[in-house]
Image (cartoon, rainbow, N blue to C red; front, side, top):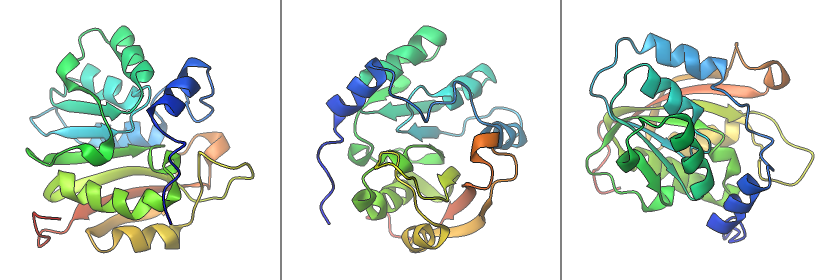
Length: 207
């Protein structure tokens, strides 16, 4: 299956400019906020938030003192919105680029998934799992939320199931946590998986 080329940078830019961002909660969601708290004091870990959109997660981490947070998005509008909200966020950590074009050197310690996976054409999901592993150091973490539901309207966002997702990630990751989130926002309760996956140490660096 070939991915739909409709969902390009212009498509997403127009959605942000026209306010067609129903997935945007206006703030970091509770499962991610609680995970960030348990990371402990800020340190030098390199953190990437791909398909970051308005990047409330990056804002939260930056305000908490984490110095090495990067965000990537195809569309300039949400990156500009982050700059306006958080003027001190390093401009060289705002990556206007395709997630699949990012290079793994130096590798990241943590990738944060928040409504990026569901925005991708489902044909790209196997490539997403591989690229996430490629960008992480051995033992690095992919964490975040995946929708464990199907949507009535045609995507994006696109839904899916736990079994489907397991098949994508199993070749590259060890599963630490892969269960229904217990502290989702009310409209999403019972419909989100909280995932915490560790890149398999034995994977080749030439993924």
